[in-house]
Structures are given as structure tokens and as C-alpha cells.
Image 1 (cartoon, rainbow, N blue to C red):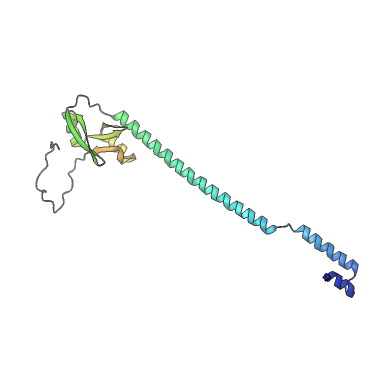
Image 2 (cartoon, rainbow, N blue to C red; image 1 turned 45 degrees about the horizontal axis):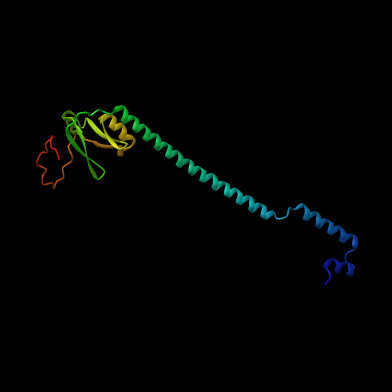
Amino acid sequence: MASLKDQLLKAGIVDAKKAKQIDKEKRKEARSQPKGHARVDEAREQARRLQAEKVERDRELNRQQQALNEKKAIQAQIIQLIRMNRIERRGGDVPYQFTDGRKIKKIYVTPQLQNELSRGRLAIARLDDGYELLPAAAARKIMQRDEDAIMLLNTSEPAPVGEEDPYAEYQIPDDLMW
């Protein structure tokens, strides 16, 4: 089967010169348009998408790294505040018990320190594997940064009493030891 061009030439509808000119124009058009133009656009779009996803991942990693660095800085501030403000408790023979999470812990203090702890003038903070006594003002500064660092800070106001509490009329003595 002959091509359309050959058929038109045989029929005499188109002459050879005109057929060559049309072929030439077709080749010029084919050369001027890049091959796989749609493929190039898809590849560019996919590259842009991948780049945007990478940028978003990098931003998220940076946010996580900044949060981690900020947490480390706060921990360092807390440790510095505890070490600068700790109160020596040498020679203590009175046991003072407090809770650390779900465990009951005990430290030995002097009667004066015990009195100040119960009145809320002193607080107990965790430092590494031990516990330190701090002034209440320093403990409040630490609690602004991390409430879990302070184990005990008594308040001077009494706890609210429930309406159905059967022991509401009985006063609890300040020097009660448990």
C-alpha cells in the first residue's frame, strides 16, 4: 500500500515540488518542537514536589532539634538554680518523708529545717540521684521551667475541704509526723 503522498502524486493532484516543500515543512515543525515535552514537564513537576517534601522534612527536623536543644537548656538552667541555691543539711537527725512519684522517700534534716519545710519556706528538689533543699522562691522559679523537678513545696493555705468529708471538723496539727 502506497502512502498518501504517492497516491496524490500518481493521481496528479499534487506535483513533486509541492510534495517536497510540504515534507520539508513537516520536518522543520518536528525539529522545532522538543521530543517528550510532556515528559519534561512531568519530570520537572515531580522534582519540584520532591524538593518541597524535602524542605518540609528538613523544617520538621529543625523544629524537633530546636525543641530538644531548648529542653536541654532548660534542664541546664534548673541544675544551675538548684546548685546555686541549695541549703546544706548536715547533722540532721529528724527524718522528713515526702513522695517522689509513687514512692515515699526520706531525708534527714534538723528540727529547724523540718519546721521551715512544713511551713512552705523550703522545698525539696531532685538533683541527679539525690535530693536538695531550696528556698521557696528558687523552687517557684524552677517550677516555672519544669514542675517535675520539685518534689515538695508546701503551701501556706489549707487544702480545700470537701462537703462530705467526715473529718472536716478536726484540725491537723502542724507537727504531725507520718
